[in-house]
Image (cartoon, rainbow, N blue to C red; front, side, top):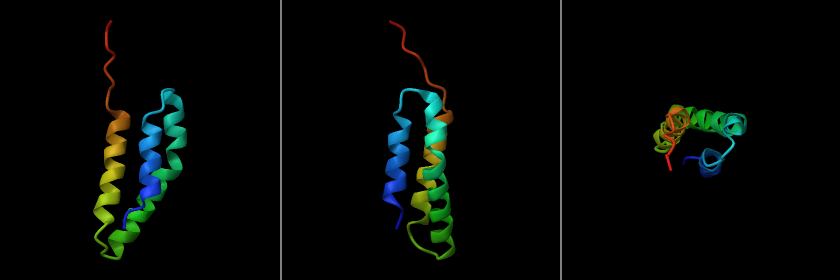
Length: 71
């Protein structure tokens, strides 16, 4: 089963406005998702892909360029 608290923590961090805090606050939840995902993968548990996919989506969202709206 994927870890809902770590995934929810990453979701909360992504909405923070000061971007410099995002990377600092996401270290522990990201490492937890990575560790949990690989542990579930080694145990052939069905939730392994969900945890690793959530982490991958988070990392894509963090590096995706943000467009500023004019006006």
